[in-house]
Length: 319
Image (cartoon, rainbow, N blue to C red; front, side, top):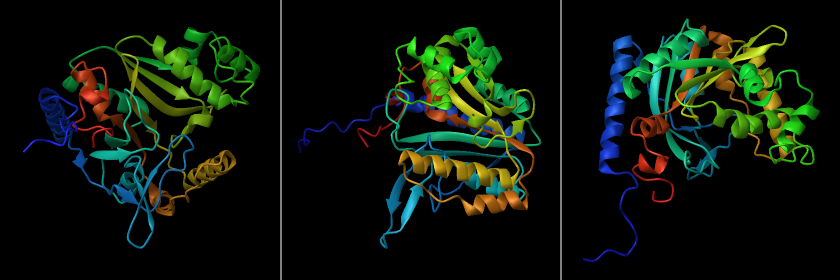
């Protein structure tokens, strides 16, 4: 019988899928040797992130109730940590609306893990051990957010006046002032178009973000204060995002409420704060550090592929 004419074939080659399987085996072997427990948490949840920069996909059951496809396993894993799980990791599918491009797909794989008693510096050491196993040994560099902007843009992202940030944007073709862009949006844009491409090859950890970009990381007091958050770039591609985790339940509640106000002001969907996550923090999240790694991008780098389409069996265009 002849086919219907549509292209049924996978996006990734069979060789790429074999590489993916080898990476998964290596990841599991690493954590097994380290005594880190593999866990599974739901892909559907009654709550989702409030972060204005992340949009969730929604599924509805037969009764019409909305369920959120989880954007990461973070909230559920932190509930396990508060319950006394000890160090844990998970390989799972995650979902984000609006994620489309050479390095993006609505549905993607996350490798996320938490180390109890670690700070973000010690966790970076842990990441490098795993990367040496998956990608082969290689050097890595650590650079603060402040150092990166000073080196590649000649300005201090933590103290520069907003007018200077607008000037930096305008000099690179973005009329941020006319668009009413605020400080954080300017920094995000400059990071993506000017700093990230200049980081060069190899592994670069960008640390100590502005406190307004703390997300769920703890803040270290100082002049100025900084968030104990990091991002990992490999050959200029963002691969991981990690925190020295916030433990304070009241601070978490306040950050969620600020997110909700921003989403409301921007006309975005406004989810409720996750009361179960807040309760877990109130019960006591242990001191820990955690990181989420884009597993598809890691496979892409391991095979020297140029896009996620080459390492996903089926992308959102062919699923």
